[in-house]
Structure formats: structure tokens, C-alpha cells
Amino acid sequence: MNAPVLDLVPILPELILALGAMALLMYGVFTGDRSARTVTLGAIALLVAAAVAVMLIGGTPRSVFNGSFVLDGFARFMKVLAFLGAAVALVLSQDFLRRERVEKFEFPILILLSTTGMGVLISAGDLIALYMGLELMSLALYVIASIHRDNAKSTEAGLKYFVLGALSSGMLLYGCSLIYGFTGTVQLAGIAAALKGGPISLGLVFGLVFLIAGMAFKVSAVPFHMWTPDVYEGAPSPVTAFFAAAPKVAAIAIFARALVTGFPAAAHQWQQIVVFVSVGSMLLGSFAAIGQTNIKRLMAYSSIGHMGFALVGLSAGTAAGVQGVAAYIAIYMIMTLGAFACIIAMRRGDEAVETIDDLAGLSRTNPLMAAALAALLFSLAGIPPLAGFFAKWYVFSAAIEAKLYTLAVIGVLSSVIGCYYYLRIVKLMYFDEPAPAFSPMRIELKTVLVASALFNTFFVVYPAPLVAAAAAAARSLF
Image (cartoon, rainbow, N blue to C red; front, side, top):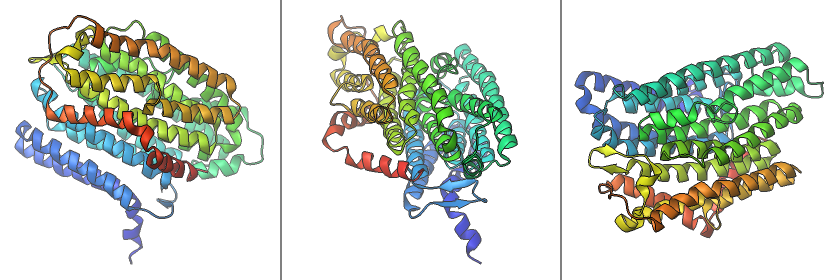
């Protein structure tokens, strides 16, 4: 009699988010846009509750729906990151959307629905659950990209994201159909069993290529990155902060789970594809960001480069590599949310400014903001002893252990090139003549910015909890 209740325990976090989103939607419909602040606070509470629920569901790996939904150590680690990242993005959004006059109660509900999709995606045990989670996550993202309907850039961003996202979904579905046709199953464990000990057919390799193409689009990896700069620039800054954090965690998680769990026998084939994608992302992210004048476009190219670094760890195809990916994405998310707290705070009165030159002389007009942003930029550049250095250390070490020496060397060189555009901003803040001062930072932005900067600065003192959690998450996949 108790079995159905027990079967729902692994999906409890997703149930909290989905049912909570429906309840908040009803509340918002009957009270109108004046309820936006209340709905946002409710959504933040639901995301924190879902993260706590994930942590409380401990024990051995569990699966429901005939293995379609898996809750193991890897899923727990990534879900906590995604849910908390979404909650922080909502915290960052409140004042900005009100000032831009786009504070709508639908926005936090769409964030909740997208995050529900991330939970399903991270726990996907078969190709059907993978596609369902991906689409639930993506459809809400297309809408919130163009939430500022009266702004041409925002509506253009949403349209570009939707059209290119539809293309990537089609490619992913085609890859899934080929994989099903050549293995006779959609279960990741079943695919691994079907490939064990036998030759890898050309048709399956084509299916794998299309599957990776669809997932590469979601992490904005080369050559499927073309939407990223325009969407990052066009979407409202808090929306861009959300794009840069939680969806990247979910996409990188399913990238690792699908390849490691479903295709261990085809590791040689997918490693070559991931290495190519990784190298392209690192090089493009490093070189294309150099000429940018808009801080959000610069962060877009930075994000492409960082996803390339994360994929270096996945290229190794080992537990150490997946551990490096998990630690990297955690540190990257914290760095990025802190940087976007600063970007959202770049306002003069009611006008948001986005050019890099607006940060000139910030150390004299707002010393705290300048110091925290400088710490985050040094960390993004991978300069020791900040957290970003250790993130790259973990993935490069895994690549070297797997004898991918050329990949590691390209990664290090790309990281050195990338230092230029981060350090240029630090130079502007500390050595150039001051631009007009920004409006005072709100307390929630200041809290996120300072907390992120402190984490990145003092990570070297006590890295053990994050490293141990990432190691436990990686072990659950092997």
C-alpha cells in the first residue's frame, strides 16, 4: 500500500516546484501584477525548499518510472546547484524588473517551470525523459528572454533563441531516433548494455553526433554558440544572469550523464567529438571576447570559453574528469552570479548601462564594488590562488591523466589569452579617470556580490567540502 508514496519520494523536489508553480499561477491570475513581489518571494522559497528536499533524500541511488528518472549522488549535487542558482537569479531580479517596468508575476513562475525541467533533465535515465526535461526547461527560457516586450533587443533575443533552439531540438531528436534504431532501446543503461562488446556502427556514431550537437547548443559550445552573445545582450540583465547559471548546470549534467552512462563502449568516438567542441569553445571564447565593448556580450563569450574548459574534464571520460566538471560548474556558477550582481547594479538613476567603459574609475566612486568585481574577474581568468584557478586545475589534471596533453596545453594557452579581457576591466576600474558614479547598490545585490567574491577568494583555505561532494557525485556515475 505504501509503495506508490515511496515511489514519489525521488521526484519530491520536482513536485514541490511544479505544484508550487501552479499554486502561484492561480494566485497571480486572481490578484494581477501587483502580486509580482509576493509571487517572486514564494518562488524563491519553493526553490530553496526543493534544494533542501534534494539534500534530505539521501541513501542509495533510486529510480522511478522504470528507470526513466534516476536520483543518485550526481543528480543530487547538480540539482542543488541548479535550484540555488535559480533562487539567487530571482533575488537579483526583483528591483531591476520593477525599475524597467516589466515586473510581471509570470516571470518567477516561468523560472520555476524551467527549473522543474532542469530537475527532470539532470535525472533523465532515458532519451525520452532527456527530451522532456530539455524542452520543459527551454520553452520557459524562450519566453523570459523576451519578457521585456516593449524592447526591440529583448524580443529579438527571444526570437533568435526560439528559432535556433527549435533547430537544436530537431537535431537532438534525430540523434535519439538513430540511437534507438541501432540499439533497440531508449534507456541509457540499456544502450550501454547493447553496445557492450560489439562493434560501434556508423549509424550509431551519426546518432551520437546529433545527440551531442543538441546538448552542445544548450551549453552554448562551439559551433552551436551563435545565439549566446545576442541573447545575453538582448535579454534583461537578471534573465541573462539566470541563463548563465542554472541552465548551464543542467545542460552540463546531462552532457556528462548521457555520455558516461549510455555510451561507455563508444568512449573513443564521443571523446573525439567532445575534444573538438572543447577546443573550439576555448579558442573562440578567448579571442572573440577581446574586442567586445558591451559587458554582457563579453560575459557571453566568457561563458562559451568556460563551457569549453568544463568539457576538457568530460573529454577525459574518467571519474576524475567528471569530478572536475562538477567542481568547475559549481565554481563557475558562483563566479558568474557575482559578476552579474555587479552588472545589474550598473545603473545611473533609472537608466541601466552596459558598456565596459562605464566601469572606468570605479575604485574611486565605489571601492567595495570595484574590489569584489576585481576578485571575481581574477577568478574567472584562473589566476591563483582564487577558486577559478582550482576549477581549471581539476579539469586540466584529469585531461593530463587521460593523456590528452594537446588538449590541456590548448586549454592553458586559451586561459592565458582570456586573461587579457578580464584584466583590461580591472585596469579600467583602478587606473582610468572615473566615469559618472552609479546609483547606490541595493542590499541584495551587494550581498550576492560580496558573498561570491569571498567564496572565490577564500576557497583555497578550505576546498574540501566542494571537492568531496564533486568526487562523490562523479563516483555515482561509474
